[in-house]
Image (cartoon, rainbow over all chains, first blue to last red):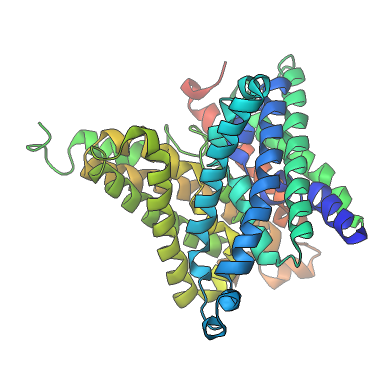
Length: 205
Length: 213
C-alpha cells in the first residue's frame, strides 16, 4: 500500500508529465486559455490515463513482452512481440477513447457536453501514449502499481494545465513586450513553473 | 493543371521554404512541442530525432495522400494512426539495429512520434487534400522547420550546459582554469521551455506580422 502511494505522489509531483517530460504540450498550450476548459480537458486526461495504462499493462504482461505467451503453451516461451507494442498501445488508446466517449454520452450527458470536444482529441495527446510507454519501460510489477502510476500522471497533468490557465488569465492584464505576447510568455512561464516543481525532486520516496 | 506543373514550381518551393521561417511548425503552428523539448539536451539525439520525424512525416504524407480518396472520413484518424504507427515501428527497429546508444537516449520519444502533433496536423491539414508530390515536399519542409528549432535549442543547451558540441569539447581548458563553469541548469528540462520562448521572442521581433494581439 505504501508503495502505491509513493508511486502516486511521485508521478504527480516529481515526475510530472508536463514539467519533467513535456508530455501533452500541444494541447497544454492550445487549450490553456481559460481555467474552465482546461479543467475539462484535465479531467478527461485523468480518466483516459486511468483506464488505458492498466489495460496496456495487461496487454504488455500477457501478450507482448518476451515469454508472455507461456499461458497459452510452454512452447511459446521464446516469442517476443514487443516490437508490436506501439501499434497495439495506440490501437487500445484510440478504441478506449471512442468507447469512453460513447459511454459518457449515454450515461452522463452533462459531463459529455462539457468534455465532448476534448475526448476525441485525447487519442492523439502524447501524455496518454507516453503514460503507457513509460509504464512499459519502468516495468511496474503489479496491476495496482500501473493503475496508481496512470492516475497520478493524469492528476499531475491536470494540475499543470489548470495552473498555467490560471496564470494566463491573469497575465492578460500585464504589460508584456509585444513579440512575447501569447505563445512566447506561456513558454517562459511554463519553464518557471517547471523550475518551481523541481523543488520536489529533493523528496526521497 | 498540376500534371503539367514542373516538379519544383514556385508553389512547390514555397511548401519547402515556408515552414522554415514564417510558417514554422513549432514556433507558429505550435505543433510537436513535446518531443522537440525533451530530446534537445544534446545535439546528437536532436539530429537523430529530426531525421526520424522527417522520414515518418514524408512517407506518411505520401501514403495518406495516395489513399486520400479511399479513406472514409469517419475512421480517418484511426487509419492515419495505423499508418504512422507502422512507419514509427520501422524507424524504431532501424535505430535499435544501427544506432543503439542514441535509441536508448531517445527512449520513449521515438514511440511518441506516433502522437507527435506535427504528423497528425500535417496529415489532416495537407495530405488529405493534396497530391502525393506536394504532400511529400510539405512533409520534408515541415520536418526541416521542426529540425531547425531542435538544432538551435540543442546547440545552446549543449554548449552552455555541457561545454561540448555533438560530444566534442569546444570550450578550451584555459577557460575552466580561469574559473568558468558549465551551467548545469541548461541541461534541466525547464530551460528547454525558456530557450524556445526566447527563440519565439527573437523571431517575432524580427517579423512583426507574427505578433499575437
